[in-house]
Image: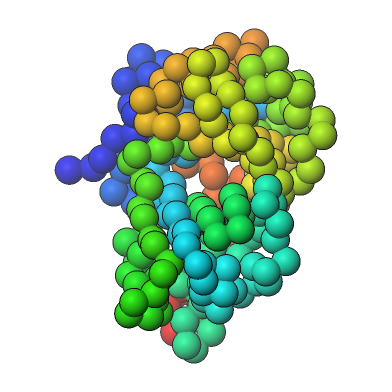
Length: 247
């Protein structure tokens, strides 16, 4: 049976059409695919990304381990920075594409594709040396992710999240949404400006409702299923299963 995000009931009430994606029952569209896609390009849209995997790595050696495992210079990141990266196998094939966030000296968070979360956890475990001080924790389900994307994302989000004008591209900071603490990043994975908000599971519905009030007046709901087509605008590869295996 497909899993449901904490926002499933909100989507049902909003009249969403659903589809199964990576083992999750996700909204395909609310008012119409083209309308919602164009809303992100010209105005703003709101995404439920709670199906995305989130993996925490912490402890002495976490930086060196990720620097070895990822196709990017993890050592170059300072706290509050993020970058796009890849897990690659021994043949150079892609295991998964992801975003890595550096939360502290020895504390990192990986945001990975829903369909590859279990494979990613296994891949990390394969290369983690016995007795390593690095602790790996799958946060998926305990936390959620929502995103506001589009040319006026900053204007719409700032009343709820505070002044976002000083937050650079591919950086993040801790903040608050309503009464709840959160992590606010600015990756704009759709190719437009945009913010991604990580909340504890129990805060997701309230956080979504607050953001929706700002978005609905300016744009439309946006289905999670538009994530990959939208990502093409951000020049992020839609990695296929054949690419991932390296065949």
